[in-house]
Length: 250
Image 1 (cartoon, rainbow, N blue to C red):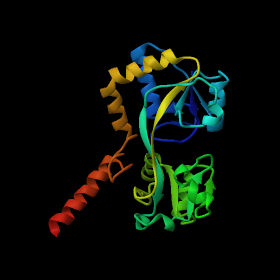
Image 2 (cartoon, rainbow, N blue to C red):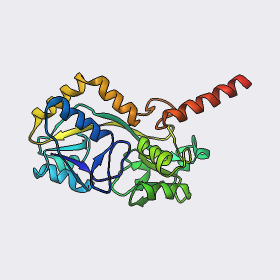
Image 3 (tube, rainbow, N blue to C red):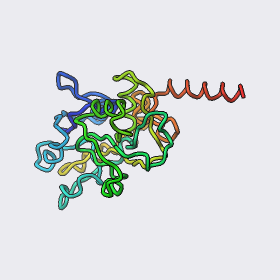
Image 4 (cartoon, rainbow, N blue to C red):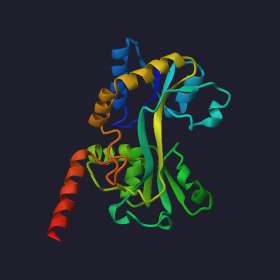
């Protein structure tokens, strides 16, 4: 059984009203099960309960996870991790007119309760940045759109997907790559089944093309290495056309 987060984190994963786990991660694990002959089930838990459930043996595996997360809780536990499943960037989204402004102008930062913006901790400790907490992504985005905060710190792809597809406000907030941000990878972890992680790693390597196709279809790594980070491809194409028109007209 894989312990997963009961949270709205599309396109990576979410849980529908019937309690069904869905999104990129679900399709990836279903593909792993089909190719490897492994039977998998999912247990969606609140984020704060997920690691304790893994350590107590209530679930066999945890996704997502990272060796860098919750190191205090994991001390003395022999956890094993898969190779990186999907890359991510956590950073600050701002109103377009604020993009590129110096960090000194970022004085109020909206975050979801439970998140820690490590890149900004020194400035927070020095009281140069004040945090405004929200219960969830929807509330945090609302704070930033109402200008109750100068920016919102979150997973860039997830926040952009929410703005584009759920809030229907594409481009209302944009990732500011000039501000500090973090890169990392989501991993699958286990306490008692390292051999299963080896099978998963083998699956990831052997079926790389199919895994990449899933990533592209869900947009989970959309433009992570470009100025268009987090944007869906149709919007990137539109912006590039606009740029080329401007260049040809000058």
